[in-house]
Length: 246
Image 1 (cartoon, rainbow, N blue to C red):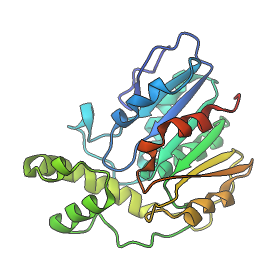
Image 2 (cartoon, rainbow, N blue to C red; image 1 turned 30 degrees about the vertical axis):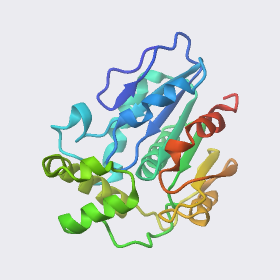
Image 3 (cartoon, rainbow, N blue to C red; image 1 turned 135 degrees about the horizontal axis):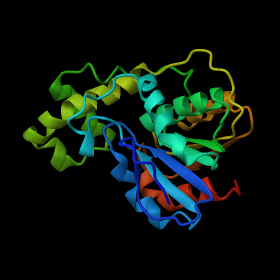
């Protein structure tokens, strides 16, 4: 294993002879650590890496990003040391937009990923049905976070912690709210999409819209749960991600 010494990537275990890399992109407000437990699910030949954006974890002192596109150059540079190893990109919610933007940039460089997996995210050409979250006042913003269910209640209840986290959270939601491609061209990459059967943030139909971008095959997997179904469905998601012999 040789995970690149980049602040953008976090590795979780040693892999002596990696056959492929699974790169995971977290949802808004989250860091690389949300994928730590995935290490027990992936097979011995898969190098598990997670993206760590500025403004969180050990990068908390860095200013957060406000546009998905701003992450791409640094991510491409961080991925260079992986060479030609097959690359699986997985992203949930905001992470799906980040994974997609990274996949498109890799295609432009002549190094398409083996698979793009998107989860809990409407297709890029579909506008949001919701009022932009990042522009709400602090009280309404915290209420919206509570309704989404991805932030622990004890975190939401701690004013000091929320004061520290709000700039990063608002920046992440600004990234998510603003990401839209009205007329995206298909990618020469297979796309695997995951939808939560009870997800009201990204409905099954909205997630199915990713088929428009799949120029090399499309599969939709609907799993039980709401918007953060990935936490309860980790094992099947990892199995679907790694069942192909890339």
